[in-house]
Image 1: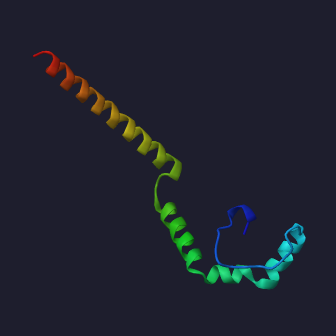
Image 2 (image 1 turned 90 degrees about the horizontal axis):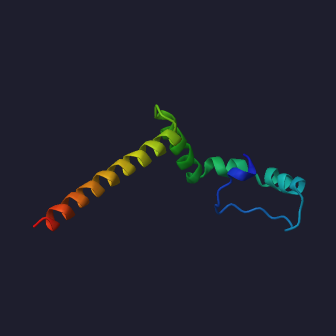
Length: 92
């Protein structure tokens, strides 16, 4: 697992604060962190989330874009309604 994709969990490894990557990787294999991760519920949740994301026909970015466009259109419609109400109140 790449280090940039790590999650904060209760798993613990012991190594010096200023240790090199080589020492961290050695501690990682000695503590069998990969096996602990695969047995954890957190891993199951991450895998389930990835499965759900793969089921969509659109990519996640396209879904976010569609949501943004929906909210923009909705706000424009609400603004037009507010202007129409204000004009009708002022015309009396």
